[in-house]
Image 1 (cartoon, rainbow, N blue to C red):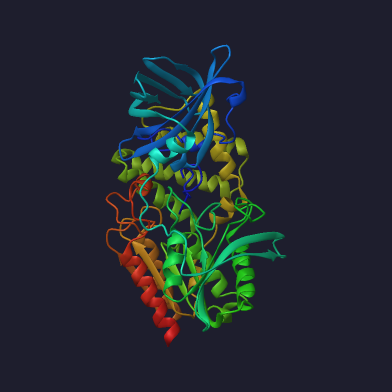
Image 2: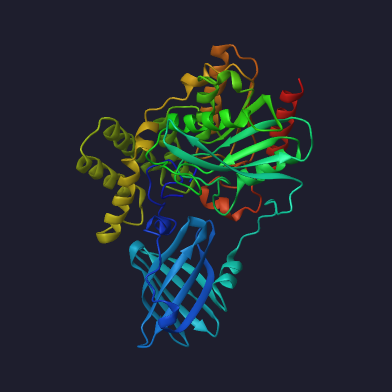
Length: 489
């Protein structure tokens, strides 16, 4: 399931010990640095931390006041962290030193002019770090921007409409964007449904915008495409974390009813596209009160087995691929199951917190977290574990809806997907198709692709941001060809 270790991924995890512990898990609000008006000097820096499987881009601002006191903040765009306070900062002609106390990280760099090179120390591990000074925050950010060749740029050869609806049943306002081909005939339409956690309309992950790429590709091929901000994101109100899969289905139904009334839409050919957790929302809508309005479904890495099984399988696969000791994997899965059972049995928070702490200790092979860092990790994870979204998902079984799907459905998974495991989930879809007798269901595994449908070497989430391609062209073409066949029959 999608999202960062702080909640983008479904598993109740802190970061794997081979990477800095959850820089994005700290409270990422505004920097505590003094305003530039009160500063004698402002310096902007950008560069990379070299982790075992990736280079993590960071930008920093340091401000020196009239008394020579240095303060600042750090952004980690790939992890969605912004404005983490920097303390114990010192800038000289030969050194650059600072700490991020929220995550127990300290930096020691030797400086030569506008370049600084050294290490990040965290949890007993050290990671090479290289920074450069720039004239502005914009230049620093530009220095770490990854290459995203598929991301479409305006002007677009189609109409773009900013839209919104009111889901009265859920008491939320939903904002989105509808792209429509510039031709006069009626157009088949697709509603894009994002995966786990709060997502914007582009489903932005690791600086990729997969829904923007998919919407652009489909619209250029004759489809109207609606994508929207999840509850609490962008222009949408409400809270994703305090909502359930069934609430999300209600949002899709609201959009579906709205889309049927829009000019230029072929109401006989409106379908749903769900990624990850969105892959279990789509079948709910297609088998609910508006089932006659759903002409087809596409599931991309769609969750098709119970939520608790997804989490346990995902956790084991991610840690195993990250080099976690084989002797510890069984203990890891057992403790993950104990944690989920504690949630499902509604045990008191202090008991859940104890089990969570034991799980964190197993995960962090470099040594147990201690002090404030441990408390922060526990608080962050307890917030997610206690959310209405997570607790409902642990009891949700997508197979019940899948067995009732009567419309055409395409399900694709990548063979390198470590978040929604292809064998288990595609297998469940095939079993559901057999049980229902729906011969219009296709389940396809695409070789070498990860959870995001990118060509991948490891399948690990840490690799997502390193891959220039947002979505493999083979997957895009497969989806488009399948959809065209459905709307031309």
